[in-house]
Length: 147
Image (cartoon, rainbow, N blue to C red; front, side, top):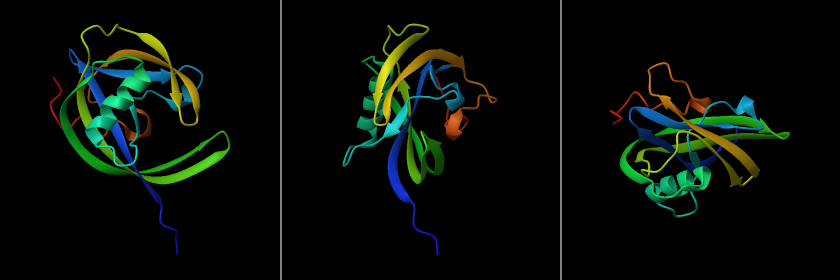
């Protein structure tokens, strides 16, 4: 009999401007791949609040606004980081967000994460059918119209 996986509420944030998606790379961990702002919900935190909070924490910028909730899906997460293996079930709430008007084309931000501080390098990528993000983060890009 297999032990039940720990469940976590997560947010996945698609920030869109002019048909492009805000993405980042980990400066010091290129193997982590291209990602979008995302993270874990706090206890009793509404997913909408968590989406804005996570986006602001990871980008170091303020003024993001939710346009719509795209949906929710479950994702079985497996990873080993710094010798620690994780196998969890993530309930991912997916949001489409508008950026503040003053976001640059690219920037770096030192984000304080639960498992350390990481340099995130942000840029914009065209949204295409071929766009693949780490950890299946692109799962909802083709399920709703991005403006």
